[in-house]
Amino acid sequence: MSNIAVSFENVTKEYQQTAMFEQGIKGFILNLHKHIQTRSSSSYQALKNVSFEVKHGEFIALIGRNGAGKSTALGLIAGVLHPTLGRVAVNGRIAPLLELGAGFHSDLTGRENILVNGVLLGLTRKEVRAKADEIIEFSGLGRFIDQPMRTYSSGMYMRLGFSVAVSIEPDILLVDEVLAVGDESFQKQCMNKMKEFKARGTTIIFVTHSLKSADDLCDRAILLHHGEVACIGEKQAVYEYYRTQID
Ligand SMILES: Nc1ncnc2c1ncn2[C@@H]1O[C@H](COP(=O)(O)OP(=O)(O)O)[C@@H](O)[C@H]1O
Ligand SMILES: [Mg+2]
Image (tube, rainbow, N blue to C red; front, side, top):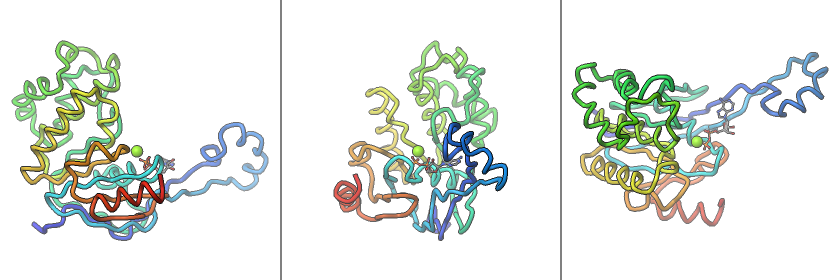
């Protein structure tokens, strides 16, 4: 296995936007005659010619303002999105912990979702059953585990998402701003788990808003700004750049 876990080579990701998405409904209606004439729609580049590499065992923080393209980058690594141009290469088993609730069915109970999700992530049913108790215990959801997930708070969603993702023992763990919604004790529990993973050599790509939360764990950081890599390298240097040039 090569020592590169993830690589982006000149990756551009374009979303097709309808005029309605850009202008809001009111603007769209006001300009309706124009849209009928031109059938206007446009594309938006969420990532522009992005290149970087993450080595196996690295803990990378992906930072940047809202809308910078962080979740798009994770979606490309997870394979739920595809690049418009360029190449994304991934080497190893991925556990994606993407935006809130991705991958859960709100009408199923937490316990049922563990089974569905575990299988989607590549475990056999037998393996998931063997791990279920451990997952439930780590989630700390108690009796809520047998309630439909639509009754869960966002923090409870994240607890279960994180618990399932870490249970598959991935080579590459993707974490998208998960700590923002959990309570403090769960945040601590997640950080400890990530510390354990790091010690084991798991690659972790961690999207974060708060520069503090990943501070002690991460090695390097990537700063995205308007869909471009503004800065990449040693975390202190990247944080400093973020604080002084962008934030
Ligand atoms: N499905 C979509 N269709 C159109 N535009 C999108 C879509 N998803 C995201 N975008 C746009 O792409 C940009 C980057 O989004 P995102 O990757 O979610 O940023 P971040 O996670 O850094 O906040 C934003 O301007 C967002 O509005
Ligand atoms: Mg995001």
